[in-house]
Length: 418
Image (cartoon, rainbow, N blue to C red; front, side, top):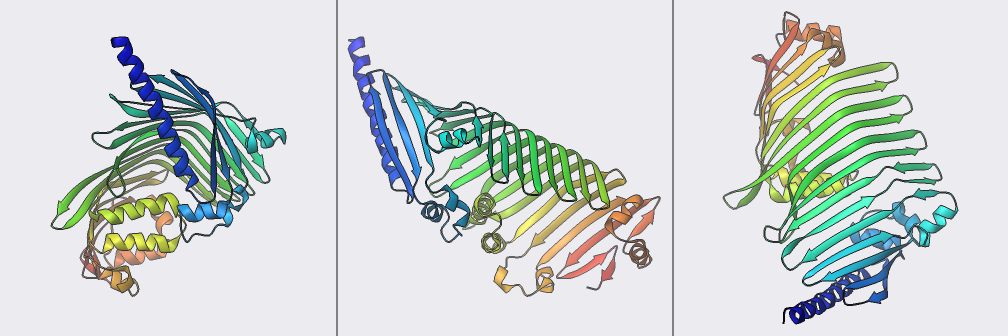
């Protein structure tokens, strides 16, 4: 009897796998500009195998589907791209395990390899699901490089692990990218050992990111006479949701650390020895937070999208707390701490800087070594500000207590007219 039940459950699980695969295929076919076909090669009781063929038929329609209203020229060259994946499915009673492998010798990738533009190793995607277990996706990508025109892209091995909890609707993602080198005409970007983890919560209308942690061993950017080098960078972000009245609000707590850094431009060179920055934003409208997150991921260079997202935040007001900000250069240290609060306002109501200042209340204290003065301002301006009482110069330390009330600003109790 137990054997019969196991066989029946295995048959049901296999039928469920075929049904899910057909549903995914039907959903892919509904995406404008994208073609998808499935070729079944094996349909056994405990094993299923086939090939998935994805084709970008019209890149402009595909981009418009993802980001309506955006220019389509940047994806035009992807039209006609063909990708093939081999998918092997292991079927057990109430449990499925899938193993997908990117076929590098087929389609567009095969053409690029024959032309000497692409060099790549194996790329695997594994995912599993079951009646009594949560889903999990694992990506194991080997090193690869692409040389096309003035583009030279080299990517090291990548490991990514995605686990989900059906009860809490929470997803957790862990990743580790060994290296990335990108060179175009006149510019170079490189990074090593980027790893981190993030949490996602799927709501009825959108995705929330309650936690994010990232660590980067090295970052290098060079373009012309400009050079930026960073090492040992860490970023942590936590988002907590709460309700006040009828508004859904979130509080954001972020903290970043930087071990060393260098910024070089023409005849200027700045050496950073350490950076610690903590910031807390409270009372952020949840729709504004989601809009800012989406703009960061998909429309980073679109000013109008950013303004629309910011408008959702400013219409409910906000409070920012520095906790604290510490910047240590080879010439000295700069610190800042305090709070900035805003009354609710609409971005369209702003009429210059003066109208924006009138909405803010602030109390911030800043302090810096005297040796940092040439980095901030020239010596003549510094002496003028010191003589006016805006800056205290004592034992080689510069200090100022800034206050902003209804658009009026003071430093150390002396009004600043601007």
